[in-house]
Amino acid sequence: MRAAVETCPELAEVIVDWFKAAAAGDASWRDRHVSRHARLRIVGTDPEEWLQGEPAYRFLKNEAENVGGKVQIRVPEVEAFRSGDVGWGLARPIITLGDGREVSPRWSAVFVREDDTWKLIQLHASIAQANEEAFGDTFSA
Image (cartoon, rainbow, N blue to C red; front, side, top):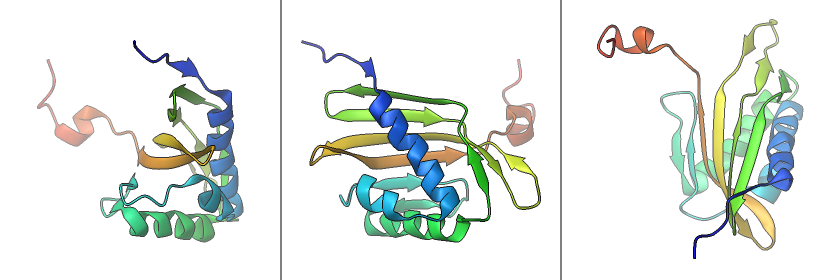
């Protein structure tokens, strides 16, 4: 029997709350919604942001505290799904920097239910770059 995949508004709200907390410098979201499991994985936009376990957990706190109050974040696009106790979400936040520039990373994460709470277990964020810019004509037809 195959588990059903369904949309999950509750998880979509958790994701939007992450961006609100990050913009405000509120690391308490991390305390409520990030797993302390050794298998926690974070892959960020910086080449050095490939973290696991406790360093990944600390990174999310530092990120929220360092960014808080310096940016504004809107989340016009968010999707969330679940199958049993596993959920995943995608978002396209728009981050307005202090100098007015806007950045719109692609964000995805996997969550698991722990103690009846959605906990992030894997996160990936990237900045979109055209294939031609990244690879030249290697992948052109």
